[in-house]
Image 1 (cartoon, one colour):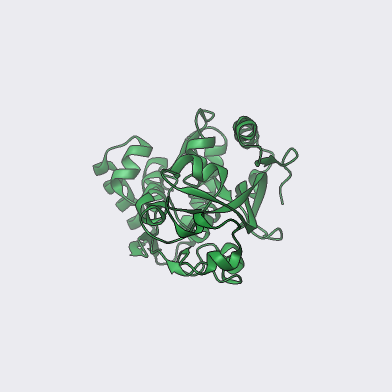
Image 2 (image 1 turned 90 degrees about the vertical axis):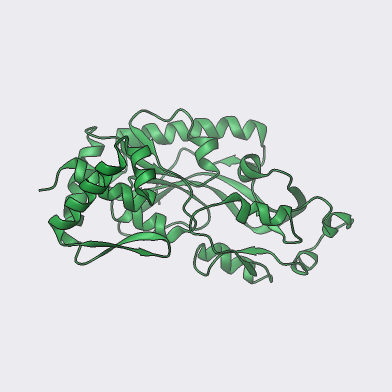
Length: 295
């Protein structure tokens, strides 16, 4: 049996990426994070190793996963704060004033793979994801509750040649380099954009950094992408082009199916929906889904 403190420290390292960040979010010292996580690793005969910038476990983690399930139940029962991860745009726009039962992470993980892993392994209890890259509706373990939908548009720097055109087509946009991420980061988005000749200027980025994403667009001829919420948070000097991408974005909450209907989850969903209702009044392009049903 492992203590809640020791497992929380190990979870915090994997979730937040460093002892410094785990200390800040969990409210314990870095030395305590180090000692407690090492005790947890020794107990289960495991090691941590950096892989693509993230801490991964080396060894048979089956007993650890059994403990994580028990400790997650304890969090849902109110013994410890529930853990929430989000996108870099949903954290500042939707997560202010969260119910006190929830604790927000750094909200800077790029790509769906790592976020899904954190939820699937019960390190994180819920993730506010961006559409369209969600778990499959027939995923036996995870459910996605869609809250909103919104368009995705192109962005560029002031003075970009595309701004001089009276009408802009996808062919015009494809004549310029367009932001992309390493293969598989957002599979559905990547596939849709590659079909029209986009997503071709790859940025290597495991954790979101504005200067590597929107900042690239501000200082170069690269074309980027935005939504009403991402532009609100990180738009800076970016200009919106009058052309939509052939995909929709939006917000969804991903959880384990065994959490569906829990009062703490319902409280989180109600809070997020209230935030989205306010934002939709300022940004009519945001449409709210009917009271969420999991898929």
